[in-house]
Image 1 (tube, one colour):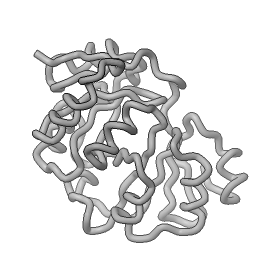
Image 2 (tube, one colour):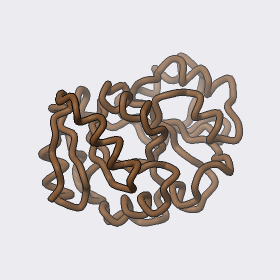
Image 3 (cartoon, helix red, strand yellow):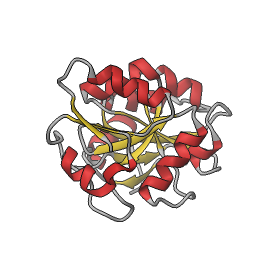
Image 4 (tube, one colour):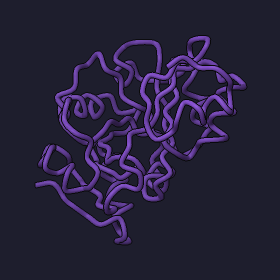
Length: 209
């Protein structure tokens, strides 16, 4: 049976990091939704995330990070506009799609060539990622269902298929991250979420939406 622990308990961070390091799947809070993830460098654990979600393997996962340096390691090119977006909106609800470097496992990006990066502002997540590194993740629901805004929402979807649930209370925003594709010119908004098109255009100029 999956464990459900409060993010406020002192041992939760270590338990979550140990489970991830041992190939497990952890449900964790972000400021927008609850996510379910595995370590980026664990191919079998990443495949487990797809199975838990009932997610098609042609839909890549997002790489959730706590340090901008990971973007430079895991993408082929970081433009000045991408740097401006990161500095303005991270940590926060913006996902940035870039060309993946050879350091990204093919399973995490559905064997394609692009990868989405996300740096949540939630403190527990950032502390966890600082311990274990990048986490490949997606929303902790079944494909096609509503986003989980609380830990009980996530558990109702995934039950005991995840190894640990970290309860941090209701999410802060309740809207998904905005997703922008920076591999095309002009950049294209793939999903409008917590950050508006107008806010983005103030930083990098005209985008398609």
